[in-house]
Amino acid sequence: MRIAVALPDLYSIIFTGRQVVNLETNISGHNTDIIMKATAEMFKDKTLEILGLKTARIVDIMPTVLPVVEAREKRLDFVFLLEDETLLHLEFQTTVPEDLLRRIAFYGARIVERHNREVNTAIIYSGRIQNAPDLLTKGSLTYKVANVYLKDMDGDAECNRLKAKIDQEEPLNEADLQKLVFLPLMKSKQPENDMVIQAAELAKVSKNEYTNFAIGALIAITDKFLPEEYKRKLLEVLRMTQIEQWLREEGLKEGLKEGKLETARKALLKGVDVEFIAEITGLSLETIQKLKNEIVVKQ
Image (cartoon, rainbow, N blue to C red; front, side, top):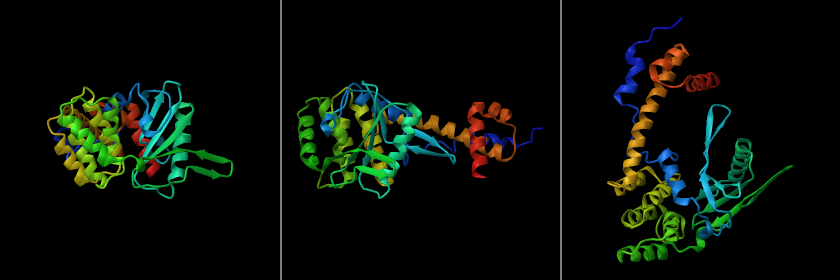
C-alpha cells in the first residue's frame, strides 16, 4: 500500500533549487566529474618525472570513491592507470597524521579488491615536511610507499620564472604547466594557501591549450587543504574562465541530483514505495534501493 505524501514534501527540493551546489564555498566537492576529467587530460600520456617518480606513462584516471561498509565512502586523491597496466595511487599531504600509513594501506587493499591490478602508492609531501615514515608492518601485513618531498623544489624561484615567461608572452610548455600545478606544494616563504591563488592567477593568463585542464588539476590537488576563505578567493580568480563555466554547469546538475536524493531519503523514511519514488524523482531503482539500504544500516 502506498502511503500518501504531500506533494510539496516530494517536489520542493527538486523544483525550488534549495539543494543547488553553492560554488561560493564548494568549488570541487574534491571529485566532481569536471575536475577529474580536467585532471585526466592534464596528465594523460605524461609521467611525473618532475616529482622524481619514475613510472610508465599515465593512460587514464580511475574512480577515486571507494564504497565501504557502514554506508560510508572513502575518497582518494588520485588513482592513475599506467600504460604498463598497473595503478599509481597518489596522495598529497601537508601534514603527517599518525594514522596515515594505516589509512593508505587500507586504501591500497580496497583498490586491489576493486580493480585486481598491481598498485603502487606514492605520497607527495609539501615543502614544509622534512621526513615521514614509508613502511607499515603489522604482523603478516607489510605496506611500503614511496615518499616524495617537495622541500627541495624552490616554489618562489619557480613562480618568478613562470611569471617572467608569461610576462614575455612565451607559451608555457607541458613541464611548465606541471610545475605550475604543483607550485603550492613546493617549498616557499609564502603560505601554501597564498601560493594556490598565485598559481591560479598565472594559469589564468598563460597561453596554452591545456590551461583549463591545469586549473582543474590545481583545484583537485589543493582542495583537501584549502580553507573555505581561500576557496572563495580562488573562485574569484577563476571568474570568466572556461573551467569556472564548466564548474557552474556541473554544480547546477549536481544540485538537482542532490535535491532528488534528499527527496528520496525523506520519502523512504516515511515509508513510500521504492517504485513510486523512482517514478517521481527520475532516479533509478538501483539508486533508491541503495539509499534504502544505507538508511537501514544507520538505524
